[in-house]
Image 1 (cartoon, rainbow, N blue to C red):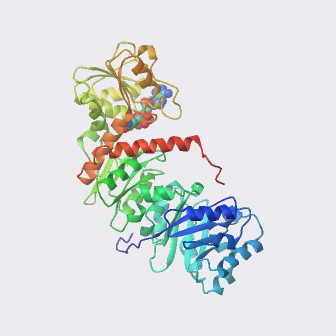
Image 2 (image 1 turned 90 degrees about the vertical axis):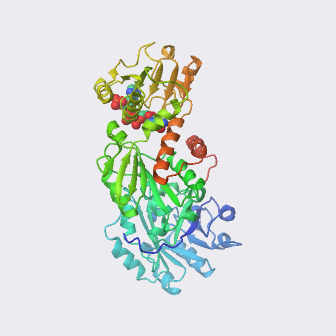
Image 3 (image 1 turned 120 degrees about the vertical axis):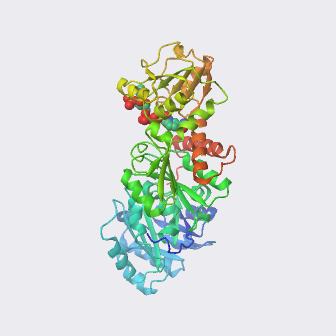
Length: 497
Ligand code: NAP
């Protein structure tokens, strides 16, 4: 990509939908921060252009999307055309016309002015995109909007190659894989980005776009970081790192990057100029093979959780090891202590390396004895039965997802066997797992996974930026985000539309 192209400041367009025109007007006026408001006439049962436009305080885009282009307007094309024509006549700042609708006279009537000519593909990225943009532009429409469904991060890069600041364009990759096209709209040459509650197409709310991703301050020089994994939608890492960037006054943004595979991430990262990434399941091993160099800890664990791009070289590290140890530091002397690790996945490997470095007496317990053997061999530890027998440990570390949201009613160890001194559960959602609750009632000290999560993230941040985030910033952001997720999981409180 041509990084030399200057990045403009894209505008923020907030999409509003409602059950009635009157409610649409109310919601339009409730929008707190926007340069443009998109009025979705197709969402209301009584579409009235005059009613939607009356008394507006901000410029608007009038859209009346038909069912055949992903909208809700089920009336005839004649009715739709009449509404859009009326919107132009009544002075709407922009009117969105679907390219496939062939309302050519509405475009040419005003010399293309105020027309957003749009094309939406909900199944993928059409092969003829450059030719389509060309054809759409040749109509003379003031703005050409292309929305495609991204199924890989690299689909964003297909749009990046269309970026052209000389003419009005809005390029959007719909779906979770396309988030970068919304947050980094300027880099994609988009005149504006859409925010709102149309979550089905991957829209995010204006509060998240502006509050968490700092949309208003993103510029050409903003450094881009992210979390690569699959899935990453319910991670708190974006909230933690973005809060830390903001608190430290750094011009950087951190995005969830749900890569389809390791190649997909590498393609995206190189084209966008990514500065660093947190790496999570299932890419901790696969991406270790793709970095130029990994540090000694990562080599020992056999997995990376962090990538740092420095002077064009991709460096890998594993901050889970330090992150794991930090919460134990002032609580227990680990040397010679009997530790039972539950599980034999990535987290168990990091915990085993960490505990062995502190000279603990480690036993690995997993339902798959062969995998347990693999982890034990890393650090010369022993393998024990699944689950561990009563009285066999001082410190129990849960490195399995047993008890993690949404299946919170289970525990890896029977309550009556919790006779040791400390129980450390790496799960952070919920903060108090069933295991930890039962351990506390049995008189054990308990440590939740949030402590490790925050510590490993602080290490990443320090490696990338050379500064430590102010105390508490990441923890508060993580706690707030977890609370938001649980509200979302309870379902919408209002019947929006
Ligand atoms: P992973 O690589 O998938 O490993 C999970 C391990 O748990 C495997 O050994 C798996 O065994 C075992 N397991 C899963 N379900 C089980 C069950 N029902 N009964 C017995 N064993 C079971 O996952 P990971 O990356 O190590 O993560 C493990 C947990 O740690 C997750 O909850 C994750 O959120 C948490 N974690 C927290 C942090 C933090 O910072 N707090 C960091 C990393 C991970 P099989 O292979 O037989 O399925």
